[in-house]
Length: 88
Image (cartoon, rainbow, N blue to C red):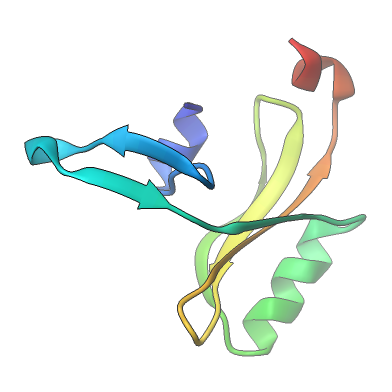
């Protein structure tokens, strides 16, 4: 699991982990690859979403940001910035 997700207390979509106290957690979210994750993230915030984390460049070759919509759904807007990092 990538440290960036843990830093923001976000678990990669559809990943199961063993959490503190032995509780199993399953996180589900929606990852959407877009041309401009900054614009998509800003539009979601303007429409009433709550930020999970601002759009940043990750060391695994993506730029992404996360939000929670008013219904509690988690959305991640991303773009690939370095295909070589994604393949390694």
